[in-house]
Amino acid sequence: MVLFSIKSADNKSNNIIYNSPHSGELFPDDFLDQISIDKHILLCSGDSFVDRLFDDAPKYGSSIMANNYARSFMDTNRAAYELDKTMFSGDIPEHLLDHSRKVDLGYGSIAKYAYTRQDIYMDTIPFKEAEERINKFYFPVHKQLEHLLNENFNDFGYSLLIDCHSMPSNEFLDIKTIHSQPDIVIGDLYGNSCSDKITEYIKHFFEDADLSVAMNDPFAGGYNTDHYGRPSENKHAIQIEINKSLYMDEHNRCPNSGFHQTKSMLNILMKWLDRDMENLI
Image (tube, rainbow, N blue to C red; front, side, top):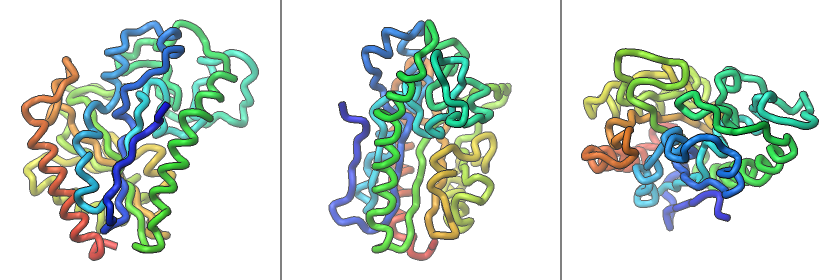
């Protein structure tokens, strides 16, 4: 059981960690026995191929970490106990639970719904089983991510987590619009997780590539940006959401003709960040 994959530069020239928490596609067999929904739908709930878009990070002095297990099974971009208690049976210590809007929508660390708003599970889950899942599939991921961010912090004097995600082109969660999503949404928790200088650099990069860019709307950042972003300590975290239509066929869940162009663009971003980070911190 390999929870995540990591690729790092042999000689790191920066302390940038690209993280893809939602591109994994593995499901344990016992999970598949519990669900009432097609596996393809669950995979469409993730960020397919985002890990591949950023997997050249080591060429540009950086590291990339990607979860191997699907977000519908375990979403590490939530607080550990960000859970809907109606999903579980048995004794549930109320003080453990983190209540949030995402939980109300059915998208906690253990999701209630697929992106289609269909129930994932046929029945309630024993809370003891949920705790075992969190201990086995959640905490080790964050232990490793924190290690990656900290192991070279003293050498470089900063860390930058770039949390890499994708978004459906027209609809997500309870947001419905006749208009397409922007090409890129950058989330820095309204300036609270990353320095303005880094945020503006990334924003202008995508704008100069003739892409439409939105800031913090509708995605301001998740648990990872909130937890790891402390700009006052020179620990920065920013979230990049990429419109899926730029690089994949959303219906068939496969790369489209724009995949290589999108990957090449992101390679330039990673190259330029490597070159310019000393001037951005």
